[in-house]
Image 1 (cartoon, rainbow, N blue to C red):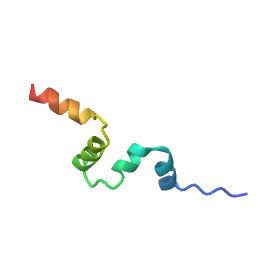
Image 2: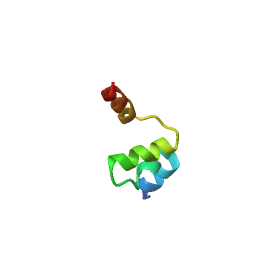
Image 3: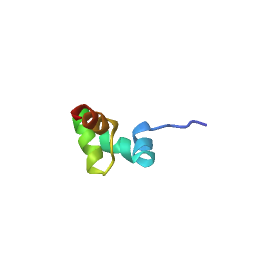
Image 4: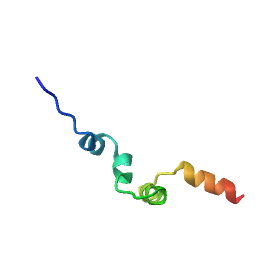
Length: 52
């Protein structure tokens, strides 16, 4: 008996945030993808804190 595991398919099914950032080519692109989903990020918090 053999089991095959496809990590990309697993990510797509189980982790929508990972799926959103998978095609990102940079941290900024990943950040924008998450913001587009309405997800706050640690980067957003750090930038706000640095601006104070």
